[in-house]
Image (cartoon, rainbow, N blue to C red):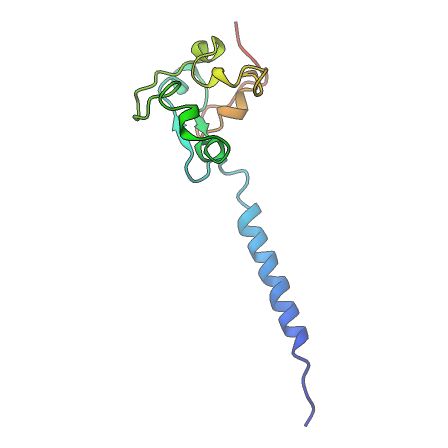
Length: 129
């Protein structure tokens, strides 16, 4: 009786599994940038003609302890922080760190305004006067 090599089917199975997994992981990249734990802020965004802000809470949380932001910068209650671009530019809320010194400045709209919306970000970056 001739022995059949088992290594070839296993290698093919692993290769196909890797390809299918890659399609699931990387296939939906353009549909949404939100991840688990992200917070969508839309109190003022769409009214101002911008997509909602997607705040990557978990991204910040794995780098900083809660007390870095709470309660000194942000109250820990949904809807209790009236965040506007004017306040951010004046170094309040997100602007405490996103000021060009500690982290990137609030000049690149699509870094924050990445939520699902029918509104598209204008081609010009930065603040509109």
